[in-house]
Image (cartoon, rainbow, N blue to C red; front, side, top):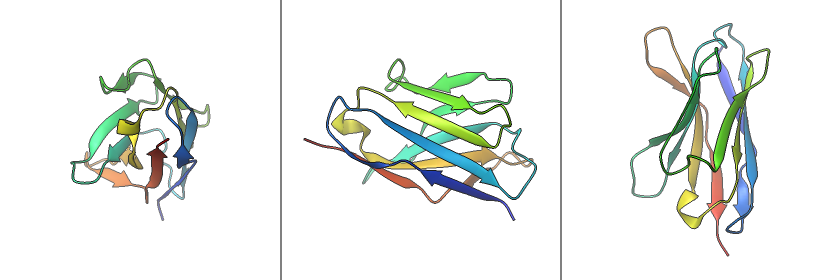
Length: 116
């Protein structure tokens, strides 16, 4: 059974860094594109960053230059390194993997709060 296991969220101050991790467990679709999304209170879920098995990355304009998505060689884990965090980065961050039917399979989410 497919699961996405996320970790690494927390409470930090503006300017701090965090690294989120997401491990694919249980299925051999780990070579599919994966990404991080976030949803702030009262807002729609939005794409933060995406990475393909070939290492091609895409970022939201709001995080370009501050966040970096990466994927381990075995493809079972992706990371989101978040630097220079801002209060507007506060959200629940979700890991997702693209399924063969082009829908996303979601992780449970991890809270990131940036506050002084």
